[in-house]
Amino acid sequence: MGVSEQHSLSVIIATRNRCDSLGRLLQSLQETRNGSGISYEVLVVDNASTDETAKTLESVSRKWPLLHPSYEGRQGKNFALNTGIRKAKGEVLCFMDDDIVLDPGWLEEFVRDYQTSGYDALQPRVLPGKDPSGKSAATEYLYRYNIPVIDYGDSMRDVRGLTGVIMSFRRKVLEKVDGFDERLPASGYEGDTDLSRRIRGAGFSIGYTPHVVAYHELDPSRYGIGYARRSQYRKGLSRSLYSSDSIMLNVIPNLLVNLLRVLIYQAIRRADKVYKTEKRILKYWGYLVGKVQMALGKEPWV
Image (cartoon, rainbow, N blue to C red; front, top):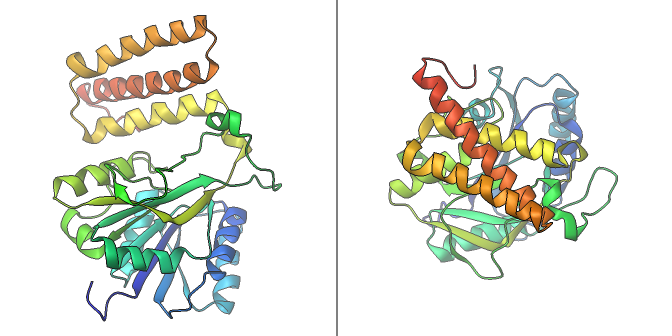
């Protein structure tokens, strides 16, 4: 980024029916440290919410001029994110889910890392936050909360992909690879993985920064293996829309291997390994089901 562009950043948030979580995120954004006077904007795209989201956005925007609400009536996270991209003015675009809160120093750290690192895209650190009652996660059972934890240590480094919870790119990246794939389902499953693949394919670099820290809300409705199975199955369905993994050489062998592993882990009573292996099984199964449905002329998500 040039001198005139280095302080230009757009936050893009797609939200649907989570006004309480969104309110906590917006409060954390209003508490951002900005001693350097960095120019930034916060774009929140209401994706056809039916709760109090519109009222929340109207109330906050009256008091906080950096917030720019908009509306996307087509239900689908990727529709909303692409709407945000079209409205954004920043040279760096930062995408955030609506159920995180941020360390107050996130903005200054982002700008510094883009200035000094040379990376085209940056993945921040993501740590467990608190549940709506303020309770922290039990670290020994962290996997049961079904939240992404991104922590590669205290130094910047190359990474292969980005996590949609919070991720960022220089504008030139999205101008080259386009935006998010709107064929993917309403919840946005695999949108980050697909975009990461296209970013790498276009020759851009992806880095991890430990300096920008987001805390992911713990949602009791997401706890446990039932949610994990459904989530991974849906990710597999989504992946079937854009990936060409070999069914005979990749998908079925991995499915069988993981079925064997889960039996072994059950026998030796490794509950954590059983949990994670079941997730892999359901993802491969979802991919296989999606490919079969498409071969029969059906859309996996219809």
